[in-house]
Image (cartoon, rainbow, N blue to C red; front, side, top):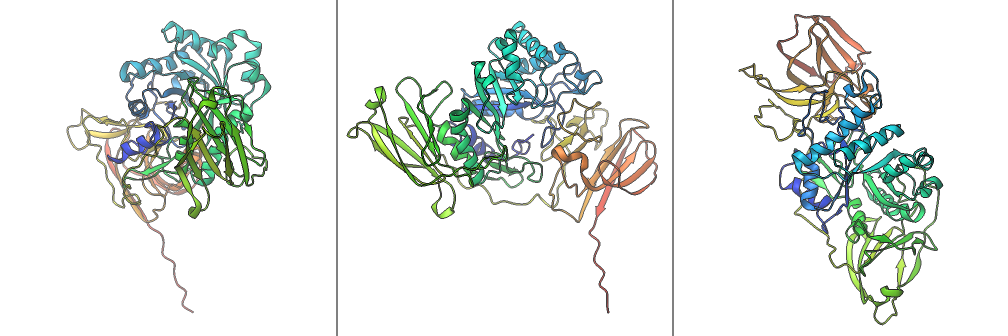
Length: 581
């Protein structure tokens, strides 16, 4: 749920952000876009809606992932698309919090998402995952492959298990059918290392989730180091950064852990952060299908180098000298190493000895006065040097040397200045044909809130925002027991919240509005704040937390289901009383 705020950015800023991410030879020029298959559950920074909330329900226009994939494809038709479930809608579990109760049903559910992507959006999904960072079921993986083949989706490849290298690698070595149906082994946060079993499978090895570090210079250093060393140390030929763009309220978990920051649609402000340019050092000068040469490795005084070719004479060399201090990722632990000033000599042999010239792109992270981000330097002429050249390397530098002349550092006019969330904000949800299923700036944290046209109401409540789930999803995280969507500014303390509300469920139903809600995402269950509740059984209460443990007030009130009420919650900071001596 990390692109939530991106969708309601005004133009031209939204398109500029997308260009920095996906447009070839402009910014990050990404090769792969991996999206969540929305499953109605909390998945780190919010919930994403499923295309099948209920057994007989199908809707391929919910959420924003379809839109995001289309925007990526519009800019780079060759981008690889991947889908992976985190949570699943509750009906698949038949009363259990488990997606493998009926293997056929879950495989069918995932298959419909792939077919829907093609049918409704002309999107070809290239890779499909199993269950993010949770258990895999060997029989389910086989059933999924058979289901895909039966639907003619032979070209869709399976990646497993989006967790650790084991036990998936050992399971594949012990089961020939499983080995045959899995195309890629994907591990999360591998710390640039793999395991013997994974290599013995002879499958492609990917770091299928990595980075997730604050997008300052240290985050950029982390990414620069792992983009090289995931292959050098662990033979991983793809590295997928979580997350694409920090487009969620910064106070949610892992704030600003995207390649760039775009968390203010109300102002249009965004920031192109250093990880964008570190990524460009690899992505602008290689493509899926290029090969790593065997001559890759570590430099004598710290740092590393890789070399890749398209097999048609092009060559790209990427050198990084990220220091320990400035390249620590959020996980796993990074053992100490030293990097110091050095000279590195490279010798081009064989067909590469004929290369007359290499373009040079350079980044230096660290002190602002000495900082360069993706700067093109004078090219290297090699005709008189017998294919040899020497680089002087300091700490925290990146060099790309390449035969490709297509690299570019894109730029746009500066975006508007940063502004806090508007102090006065209202929404009547009066949208006849909404482009997105969710109202702008609302970030669902448990449950799914969608635009709903109440055709039976000719008055002011015809257009509404409705919580649509009727059962708890198969959860990935600790979803709350009450549905909640957040909006606004975490710094607000004196505020008035007013909302028209409608309880649909007689006797047991209820609704609340709240202010000063202090947390969300995977921590939503323990959210504190001021919560004002009314219930269909004619009671009300005011609590200090979402779970309802801390009660400030309670009583009876003339409330019933199937009627509209206006709730108002006014929160004021009590003034301090002065003691006069």
